[in-house]
Amino acid sequence: MGRGALISPLVMSVATAVSGCDAAESESVTQFRPDYRGIETRLLDGDLVSFRVEMAGARDTTDVDRYAECAAAQYTLIRGFGFARHVRTKVVEEGGIWRGDAVYTISPALPDGIRKIDAEVVAADCAENGIPMV
Image 1: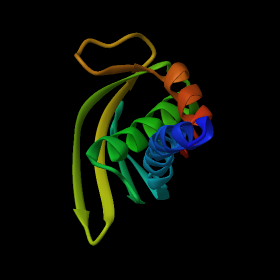
Image 2: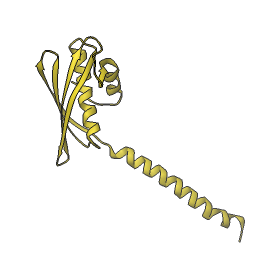
Image 3: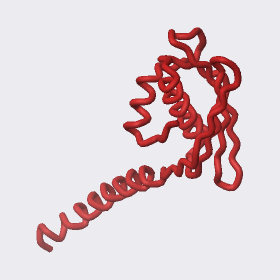
């Protein structure tokens, strides 16, 4: 038996293992194919705004929440403000369609609260990641 006969099975098993990792990584990346279906914006009262978003292909509620956050960031900039504070988000999924109802306050200065966003930074990140905005 020549040297090539001993190396080939080893090389083949390593190549198969490596290609399996690449395929698994590639599959997980390609599985997320969001279908952003729209944003509805409602001014509730002064600086309080509701954002209703709808999408398919979300991995979980985080994707829906992010979509609403992108809408809030762009809306905040359109209104001439720089910051927003997250009040709440409700997400439901039915038949593969995800719907989110998020409420934010918008303000010219950094607001109090736990979940606040710098609208310019968030909007830039959303644009870079292909997430639609208002």
